[in-house]
Image (tube, rainbow, N blue to C red; front, side, top):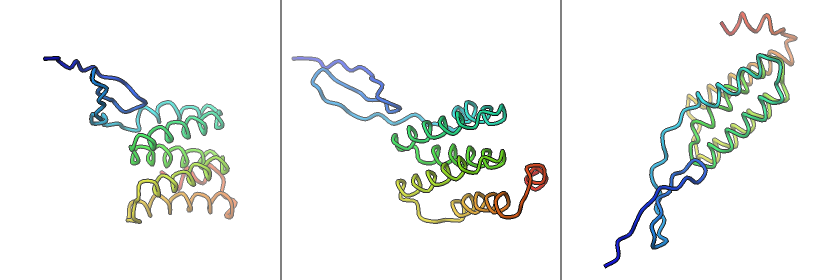
Length: 144
């Protein structure tokens, strides 16, 4: 009688369990939070590196989304887009907001109060920055 030996393998952010009989079973993905990603992204914005922050946000969100961690991806995209918009980086903020909508669609999310609220907040920031002639100083007073 042959005994199967199991060993854990890492594949992306998903842990896999493989046996010597070539059977692969999925193990539950570890609970993730957006804090690790945001700790790497947000300081780049405040230090004047918006392009790098934008690329990191897209990379983290793509990885989270592909591993089925849609809520974490949405949080990373929203927080990053909001901070980029507050810093006057409208192009990057809009790109991440559009990506956020794509993640909602991939998740199969039905429009709810929370998702509508996040999207409305992004639209409000865009409207304020682009059409109201608002400055980031005025924006800081509004967002306090």
